[in-house]
Image (cartoon, rainbow, N blue to C red; front, side):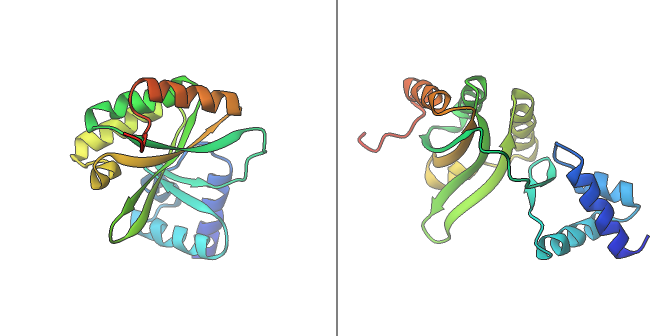
Length: 174
């Protein structure tokens, strides 16, 4: 398979898969190394297609219909409250799109999360634990932002209320 055919196959796989696909899986499908896939993804992005890298793999950024509400929340908590934060957002009907911190030197640093369920959250938490990596919020003493997507503003408000009740929602008046 020549390079342009391989990139078309990668686009086809990403376009027809609703969940993230790892570089390793794409490499196996295309019978090339993972590093070749990483290069192909860079070229696909350069051609104008929005491919996002998530902790679980690549996903095509297809603009969803506007039948949802998207908002941003500021949170402050310790690492031992991370699971509760994620589960609360998900259990109350939210999807966690990303996390952003503001670093004193680098400015805004964001990571695409795409956590849609407790299953996704558990995979993310296990990966943090297995790699002994610290969450981005460790760079800012626990302060961070999440972009949340949910069905309505009312659901978003319920998520915020519950996070506030649990002491997770950041309140700069403290």
